[in-house]
Length: 243
Image (tube, rainbow, N blue to C red):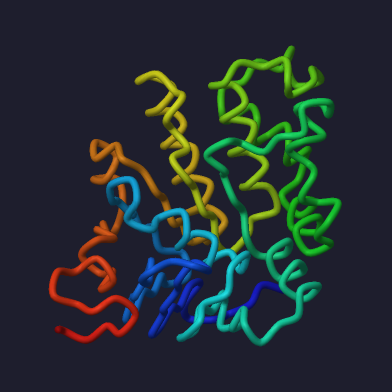
C-alpha cells in the first residue's frame, strides 16, 4: 500500500555545511514537492544542487532543519531504516548512471526489485514484464536488453538508468541531468516517457538540468540560488541573518 503523505518532499529550515568549510553550502527556509507534482530545479555549477539532492535522498543529513520523504524525517532513522525507505520509495537517475557494467540491461533495470518487496509487488501489478515495458518505452532496441550494460553507448546507458529509477513506481523520482548525453530527438522522447510514467504512477519528479528548453514541461520551476540563503549577498555565512 502506498503512503498517503501530502508532500513527497518537505524540507524546512535546512542548513548544511560541509566539514571544514568556511560557510554553509545550503540555507533553505522551505522547499516542498506535493505528491505527484513535477519540479524543474535549475542553477549554475557550485550552487549546491548535488548537495541538495544528497540531502533529499537521505544520503546526507542536515546540521539544522528537517528533510522529510513522505512525511518521514530522514534524521530520525538509523542507517538501515534510511536504506529501506530509500529502496521502497525513491527512484534516482544518476548523472553518472551508476549501472553495474557486468550485469545485463534487464538485470540492471530489475535491480531495485531485489532490494524492495514493495516495488517488486507494484511492478508485478503493472502486468507483463515491467522492465521490458519500460525499456521498450525508452526506444532501446530489444536486441540490447540482454547485453552487458557496460557494452552500451553513453546515451543508451542513460535510458537504462531511467528505466531502473522508474520501475516499481517509486513515490519520488530524482533525475540529475538525465538528458545530457541524448541528442534532440532522443531527448524529446525521453522526456515524454519520463513525465508520462511518473504521471501514470503518481510519482513526484524532481528534475535537475541546465537545459532550460525543458523547463516548460514542468508544473514549477525553481531557481536554487534564489532560495538558497547561503548564496545571497549580505548574509553572514552559517547564520542566515543579514549582516
